Image 1 (spheres, rainbow, N blue to C red):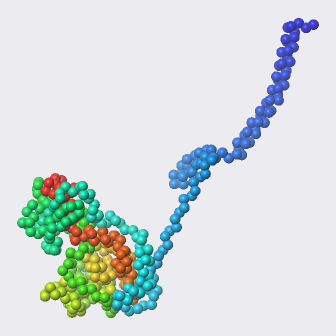
Image 2 (image 1 turned 180 degrees about the vertical axis):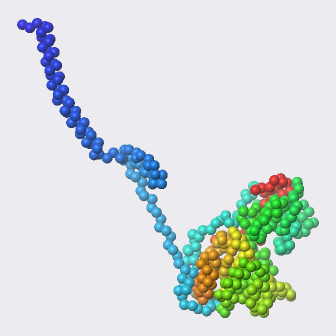
Image 3 (image 1 turned 60 degrees about the vertical axis):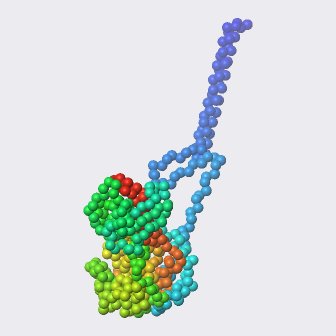
Amino acid sequence: MMNASSSNSNSNSRYSSNSNSNFRFIIPILGFALLCTLFLFSNLDFSSYSTPPVSDNRASSPVITTTKNVSPPSPVATSNPPPVILTAVDSVGSRPKETFSDLITTFDRWDQEVGCDRFQEKFKGWTVNASAVQEIDRYECSELKMSHASVYVKLASWVPDILDGLYQCRCGLSCLWTRNEALADKADVWLWVTFHLQNRTEGGPLHAFFQIEAPRWRSGHEDIFISYHASSEVQATYAGKFFRIHRSYNVPNNKRDDVLVYWSSSNCKPHRDEIAKKFLSLVSHHSMGKCLNNVGDSDMALTFYPDCQMEENPIPHWWDHLHCAMSHYKFVLAIENTFTESYVTEKLYYALDVGAVPIYFGAPNVWDLVPPNSIIDASKFKSIEELADYVKAVGKDPVAYAEFHAWRRCGVMGNYGKVRLASLDTLPCRLCEEASVRGGRKAPLTTLS
């Protein structure tokens, strides 16, 4: 019979033997399970649960991550580019050449072949630099410090007398614009259009200097600088009517077909004459001024067009009937004295006013200041010869020619409406408004920037 000690020893030996045997089976099973797990992780895709690493390439498209039960966003639909709308000026030279002079018939043909709807659609998205023209309501009414302001036109010989008067302006502001020193005895603004060397004194009127020619030179003594450019304190474009209020506007319904281009210049500048001489040698033309005159005298317009005579001027000057004379021609050559930004003068606007098509050499941003498809921009042509060929082709294409007048017949203006509102015509109210914002005579000697 075994004793207790022997019994316990045998029991422990059996336990140890069984345990070793069990471990021999467990280890292979665990190893097999580990291999299966590694196999599954290497073959299953867990990308929907993970965030991709950020790429170092910053120009690449952003990565969109999603979670398991959220659908990725639908791709953004890209709009198709607007269709190209072609009109008569896009096919100059494709129609048979024709002589024409009657504008009513010419416009009627354009209405039938193109029409305002198509023209308006073509220029619906036409973009220009809006900042090229000042907003006439750029100040809030609450910024005005005075309800009345007055301007004494001290030295401005060429500013039309017809501007004199009392104006009712926006925001309840009244404005007196006058050349009469007695009426302007307590003026808020003195206006010069010539250089002056007088500094403003404390409590005195603001000094305004009007320099409408290029280049724009400040006098150095003004509080308010006025020029053709929108960067000035007050802008005054050439597009208004008051520059030429006393001139004949007897505009005919017919255009000459024997002479294509009108030009008139009595300020003979070498660079301008050189351009004009080269271009005019290639087209039929009348030159009415002193420069390159080919009609015998600088005042021959009344001989050609007696209907341009103004009854109120018994002794006419050539400039009195300038507009009426040029209105008889299909095209007017317009060459600026200086080619610089926003300097678009009466040379172009006269032609637009009388119903002619300007052939323009001048401001590089001219399209910011005129209606769409209203001029022939010489800078778009490779040579003077190419320009002349185009002008002659349009002059024999009544439908294409009519399209250069579609802007006014269809009401497509671009920036031109703003250009007119920022002209000399509205200068009195806009200058008075500037003076009111500054406080008139109470303005500090350090001026607004």
